[in-house]
Length: 224
Image (spheres, one colour):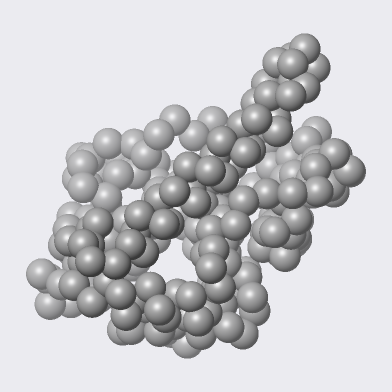
């Protein structure tokens, strides 16, 4: 995990959560970047100069971040994947004991559900073949709808997940028929929030503001 990914951005925005759960006192954070399971770097982060520099250092201990956490060399890890050591080491636990309930409550309170990833098409391709944008969007939507229908198909579970029907009922109650809507308009609130957090934390570079890109270009050109 690197300090410049979106996950730390969300967490830093909701600092009161860290203060309560980690007894965080507001002192500056040193972000140690690396792989959870291996003594390797996490990707090849090489950002442009930031408006407000972040105190970030690579993990050069020769150990994985997981081992550093177990040895008490770092205070916590943040990532999108649950590391293998969680639940196996007595002094390491989730930040929130019931992460599922905490996630649900956050969404119900804010109606913000952070997006997964963006799909990007090169401008030169769009300029030459404008139909590619709509075709790609429709194809991805069809693929997602097909996956949702198969997941909800009665009789045979598509995934080896006990209680799947009851989980799907709960998802429907919270999100409606589509928990993963595509397009900008359907995700406007989450995207606007993320852009605002980037700007508040001065993560954007002076040359290329994420807020400017989204607000002045994408909002004009796509309504879905």
